[in-house]
Image 1 (tube, helix red, strand yellow):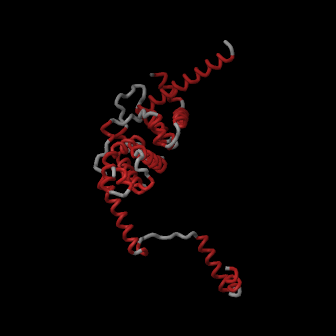
Image 2 (cartoon, each protein chain N blue to C red):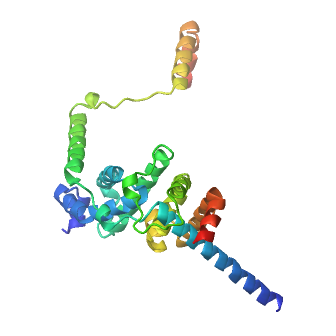
Length: 176
Length: 107
């Protein structure tokens, strides 16, 4: 029996092996979405807990990585929905590596606030596509939507951000 | 320029504007919320012990529930409306015991 078959049969050692093989990718995916390392650790555990509980639904010859990404995305999206407006983005993950002189500290705070106010499903694709430069295909597969819908959501997120930032984006555009 | 060419040119203009807008917002966003560096894409601790204890506590709870179903700690919630219906039915039986034979006949 291979690893995934043993996992489906309820073998805890096989599950541990799968966890060790995939936890980094799952954590990296979640922390990119929620941008909070402590929350990302809890959500990674939650993801694998749900995977373990629903192991009977998994096909032993299926793609464990894709399945775990899908569950992780749903859990991260739920977290964004619950924590919306309750928490600010933590500062330790927010220092730009090459700051643009035209974008002041105050402007950054306004952009961050506009970003935090995006509806979660738009924030998810905006984070992955615009900030993390993840391929649309990867986002679509993880979110369980089509590539066309990812493009639509990116476009709408851009429009919403532009609307919320108003004159600020034009002002910065003129400076840079 | 014929109408078809005009349409094509205007579509290309719109697409160009949208691309510019996307790039500008992307630039601003990345200044405020920068991409995470590789060092921050790894968990700080080994998460397996946490997960394992969660699995084990669930297994223990399941075993306790199978040995003694009453001690599973699972509480059944009944909606207030159901309690009201039950109270109404009991009151009806108490005040009008004559309906009992007809109920028995129907059920």
